[in-house]
Image (tube, rainbow over all chains, first blue to last red):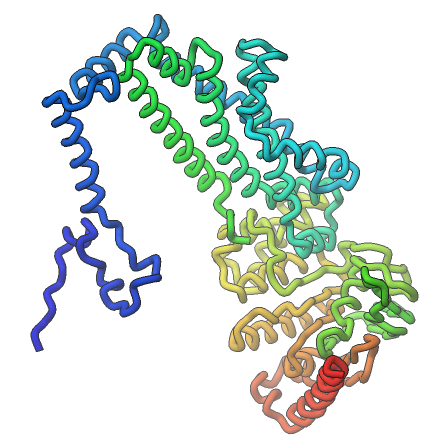
Length: 288
Length: 266
């Protein structure tokens, strides 16, 4: 019987061949862990898209009004980095958006976490706040923009208040479910070890709720990032959202595209950062 | 007398749709200080309810439990609990878990550290103090739970199927550890179990409970827990006395289960 040839390591890395363990599986369809990275095709599609862009720029296939050329985009990036956009540096546009998100999430957490704890621990608090939280939960924060403009105008307070609302209910619900998820045997064990009510709150209920609070923070960050961009589209003169909206008015398609890419990159960085923080701060997540 | 007095305890749960469940009916039992008592019975016989009443998590409908002449009205550090699993604090290390009781009581750090080190030595986890508990196997986690309970120096240790989630081999080893701790510390221990063998091996007194309403069916006085210190567990469990008792109790519980099934069928 002839020996089957082993696939090379490069082929395995590229996903053109399965690794040794998967090769021994007889059932692959339906086994999610038998699906390999398919990295070869990822590289293929990325290179293909870039080449398509280069080619269409060279041949002038797409009007610059619809999609910028490679050269034009590069020049615009240099211009944005060195001179900024409309007398405001690019970093300031990005910085103000990030600042708004962080403030909104911070205020949302500072109010929402104690609120969620109260709702999880006391019937009175639950009864008082449940109708409000359950009513506000399904409303997209963007639907509140008109009302908030009526209340606060379009200054900084308005945007941060909107983001505060966007994160408040996410944080409240996360904290409440974190409190409710504590196993009664842990609470019983702590009482039997002589802990007081305050000690139970501090040393059992709080650490037990931290993983869910952190998941809430991550969700709130994501939602607020989406909301801030949309809010800046409506009313702002600084921020990444306002940058692409103003650029649109001047038919600067290249700035619009660059802005979209920046929004994507920052959203991704926030997610990665939060995941890293979670692994560092709450290593016991999911191990209860 | 010092020890635990369970005095005519009844527990009636009212069902949401009306109707009542008599989880315990007129249960009386005296447990002497330093005794190890195992409680056995088919599901629904109220053994866990009884333990929760002794622990102070539930108040009985009538009757009372007294520990050293004081009526139990709530949980307290003189009655330690060991649960089946999942009651350790996964955000703390092994040492921090064991130190939980003394820390809550505000005991001096150095004294607590000495105690924790000694207890980890006793349960064979001296090299695992700094590990997070979730990295330990099920058997090791139960060792931590035992050490955490002992760190508070309770008068009574209540165990709710502490070895129920372990594999058979680990379980036998842990039975040996429970016996050893009982001998060394002289604590009063009440142990709930599903395993007839475990109840026979660990109980100086074995309480067999019956369901509907939950009550004490029979009480055995057994020599095996004492022998466990000198003879090997396998020899004890293979001995004719042990086997005879085991079969007798098994068939008793078997009949109770049959009766329940019959009622369900009818």
